[in-house]
Image (cartoon, rainbow, N blue to C red; front, top):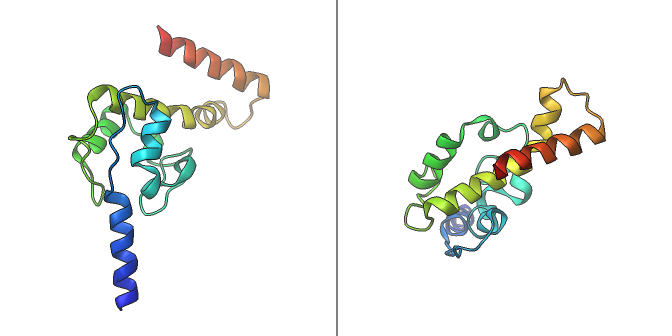
Length: 130
């Protein structure tokens, strides 16, 4: 029982330890600083649910993800005092970038040549810049 309690406390500590990202940090750096302990490397999940390709989170609108990040959800703490709006946007953009190739393949019925993926990703980045 003590061992289980120790593991639970360690897990909660890992999820709640917060390093404040700087304003110049990328979405990936913010994810690594704040999210990787619970959501795992490459958004595969762990203590927290997966955020990567095929996950429920990947299908949610940006507003939902923003609300979850700012307010917290379930066991996830609020990051309202840690992240500003621009940092939240960068974090959501990173989650979308990781999910983009999978979403393109899924939208084309699972059949997509490598050149199609590259051109689709390039087009998506062009749209983000405008």
